[in-house]
Length: 434
Image (cartoon, rainbow, N blue to C red; front, top):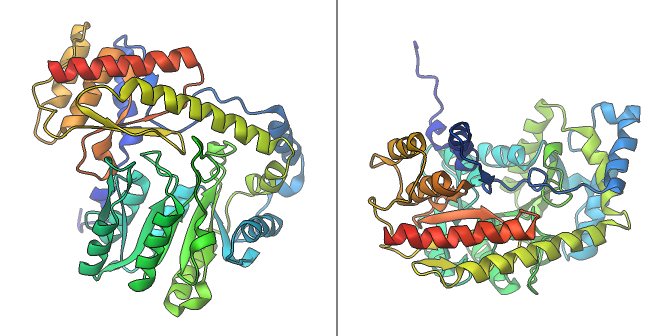
């Protein structure tokens, strides 16, 4: 072309969670039956949406008002409802004006990072959910900046690493916290959140808290919403209904802004996010209208508790099957519905394989794993998929030097869930010994 039209950060936009689906589909065509454990969509894994929930949506679909534009920030009654929920639970007071709706958190994430000054960086966890790391890196046109999550300490943040990174990189302007965490399933205790907020306060930073899984915590663990602890530090909390209801197809998420009045630069930044949303007019109306009806329904707490109980069961089955497998590190998942497994350093090589019966499948995998650009954990993931049909995501795609994989806990059939994790355990041993 006459000019280079490619954005400086285009190379940072990666999403291995969905990219691996293309490989799985090719293997399906070659006769491999697959278990798709790569993406956090409860509905795709057979989650049954209760009738009372469907009735709320169906009734709204019969109302003309569900088909029109809503205010740019979102449906006023819904924002008032959500503000009251936050005020009831936390110490930070907000109003409906502090809430902005988006077409899913993916939309919110792209705007929150995309409207930062290019030189301003947000440090995120490593590993981290790739929509965050890709969005932040694409905005800056550079690799993500990150602080370490420690697999030898429940995947908790390495606070010394965070503090040093902030101290010696003056471009860092914000800290990303994902709690409960994706991809690790860690739940951060109050003391860790307080320390992270203290670092933000000391260095005059703002905080982004992705709290989409906040109501999916189990195994006797507890945490606090950032609104309980934030004090006077500027912050944005990201929330939605895609995982909790679950209604991922609604593409309905929102941000809650705390302490915008405490810092004029942060206030102007938040206004730019709203201005950007105004250019789009608004987000989808019907899902917003459903939120108060869903969350205030008498069945909703019972529904959430049933889901938490199921994920707790799956968490413990998975942990018990993997914890004694030589060559890996595994932590019990306590929130969200993911587990991250990493290989002990030095255990993976570029010579390990798994037996693959179908010749065409074996040749395809061998062609995929050849080349220095293929990470050792991606090599394992491809062999696991081809040999067993189990599709997981390499942990290296979550912006981390660790090597391993992330898997969901969403399979509803306990017998099938157990089979999947037994198969993984067996094949890890087989692969490492090959």
